[in-house]
Amino acid sequence: MQNQSEIALSFLQYLQLEKNYSEYTVNYYRIDIDEFYMFIIEQDIEGLHTVTYLDARLYLTKLYERNLAKKSIARKTSCLRSFFKWLMREQYVQENPFAQVSLPKKEQRLPQFLYEEELDTLFKSIKCDTALGMRDKALLEVLYATGIRVSECCGMQLQDIDFSLGTILVHGKGKKDRYVPFGKYAREALHMYINNARNKLVDHQKHECLFVNFRGDPLTARGVRYILTTLFNNACKDGKIYPHMLRHSFATHLLNKGADLRSVQELLGHSNLSSTQVYTHVTKEQLRKVYQSSHPRA
Image 1 (tube, helix red, strand yellow):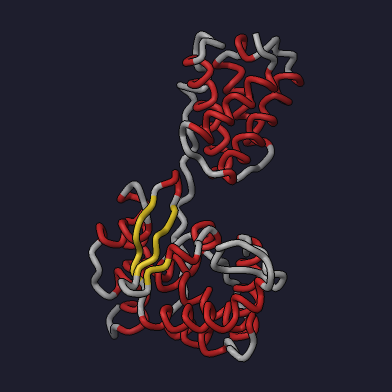
Image 2: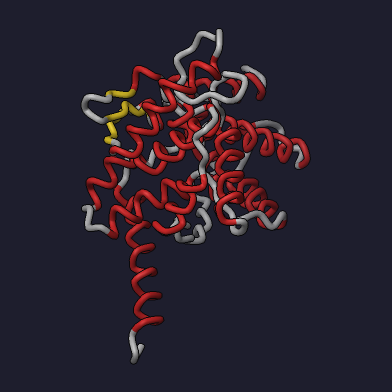
């Protein structure tokens, strides 16, 4: 029988190759499994094949004792449930000790979004007199115009943009591709960036990534976060922005303007409608606030 490290590696390869999980997701699985392996050693458990339901409950208790967020505990538990399900399939173990362990209910947080006025201020604050300024404008316009994830934006290639149709081929989660339209503002910003700035930044490097950093290397998610934080601080001087807020803003503004839920689901690349429905709660909450602040008998 393989040792535990080899078994974990086989499972992670399964997630990448068969389940098409992203490197980001697989890394979380790796961390969660490593932590559980430490628990096995601390509790002097012989191996994966001897882990019981009571061991799983004890591990869950220890997670709660660390004062972790319910979301983190749910993720770690779900990870180990999947891991043992795979171990059963591969006949390393006879039963799944995490199968009957109940997941903690996640706190339902409403997505944060930017108001249209805030976005206008943000767009107007960008100076397009430098190559980086043109890149920042194009980046911001594309993220808001399409609602794509930062990882999807970082993975965009020049050939993914179809200016004649006004669409972008987006390579989404689980290697699921979709076409997303973009409007005139994003079109103008992209034209300016590609024609006047990108070649200057890339210089002699050979790659087709759309967005690049000041060295000409492909832009990373961390780089996008830094750019947006800097832009927001320059424009508003207070508050905090993170990349996903543009995705939240995209969905919220579409629904506020009357877009149907199924269309927004398709544009966002959500596999389940329930993931999109959270934005209806956002709009309802906003309506409630407007009502309470405006109605004379609220």
